[in-house]
Length: 243
Image (cartoon, rainbow, N blue to C red; front, side):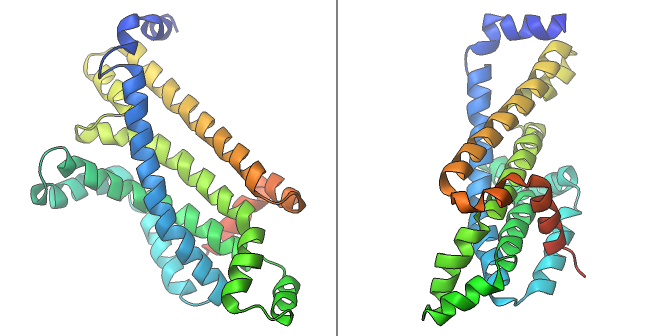
């Protein structure tokens, strides 16, 4: 604890391109880029599967396979394959973002799919009875009702990505993982502990931001579904079950 406090209160830890603010900014950039790309893939695909019921077995099995791949091993493999095709820092950045996206897609896809599938059939029938098209039913009925589980998937993916983005430092990139890698190399245990603490704090702050946005976006009528985090996780897990 003394080493940790000494490192956190050292002015040198907060200055320059290797200081805490710069590393936090790099970590957030990696994480935000990953979540945007993963959401662009996972949410539309999950909505389509939940709305149409098509492709469930194929996509679910594929996603489950993606979740079982060791992240660190996949990162090194991606760098070896894609690195020679690229140049400079991008030779390490692109493989890292690619691997993080693979990690983030499953929970986002699960949340979107489970949310749409769990919409009350009576609400769908009532919407169709009012003359709504299939597209209108999706975006005016199913998506608003599915928002709690969609946000649950996004929050789960954000936590996983922020924690795993530390691996980017193992392939010469920045982010908070640099404190862990460099601290281990120099046996600076205060720096290592500080890096781990910063990752945990950053993950909690990002989750808090998502919680606030969710509270503002989700209809108050869906509050029970929003507050039942455990039920949301069970529903998302069941959505990705191959059976």
